[in-house]
Length: 110
Image (cartoon, rainbow, N blue to C red; front, side):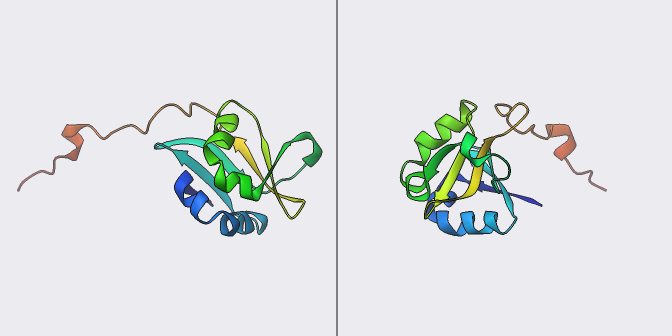
């Protein structure tokens, strides 16, 4: 199951989220209400990814997520070991969730 978190939540408890990812969980990261990245376990070719230390992800999250939004995949390192990957979300990430039309929100009065 994929959980959704905001950048503020990730910055506030970075190590906990990265440890949960290393244990197998996946998170979609929101920025201003839009999905911009998927934080998941780093499988595959780690040396092909751009490495960012865990502390830099916490302190410079905006810069890191700007790079992810531009299409880069970032490897998150903790104590010199790759523990997670930040990948851009696929699909139309700029589209906001659709709203329920006003007619559908009204409940019939009996």
